[in-house]
Amino acid sequence: MTDIETDARLLAQPIGFWASQTQLAVLAYVRGELAELGVTQPLWWVLSHTEAAGGMDRDALAAKLRGIVESDATIPEAVEDARGRGWLVQDDTGRLTLTGAGRAAHARIGEVAGGLRGVLHEGVSDEDYLVVVKSLRRIIANAGGHVRYPAR
Image 1 (cartoon, rainbow, N blue to C red):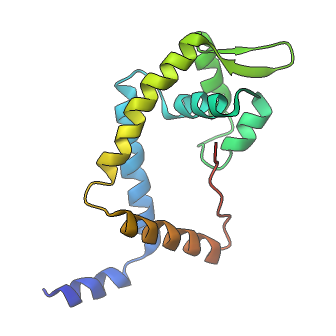
Image 2 (tube, helix red, strand yellow):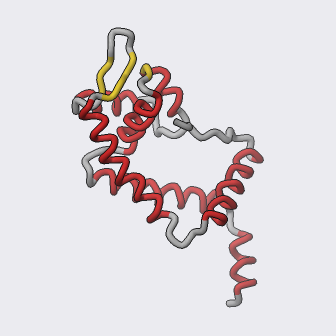
């Protein structure tokens, strides 16, 4: 089979299939690596977004992460996990902040999480990555979806 035939066959394949397969593979990889540290991806999101914001209340945190979590219960469960580990405290106003132990855990997990990007992007240039992300964002918009990344 020539490259032209391969490309033609790839062009005929549905983007939804490849997008879902990418999501499944990336989630399995990332969650497996985080599990080796004894944490979940939602717990990492809670620590990361709370630290970046300098603290926030539960509703603001849930709103920020809505759209990337599996269920509405995911973030409250992760908040309680972090609190149970002594990584997160809630003051009288309801504001969640990281403890010293939480900041240390955030830094330790962040080192691992930061390295995951390199593994996932191996062999993919920044230019190619930009083409993929911009193309997916365009397809999402074309399908009537919302193109929003929960920036910290």
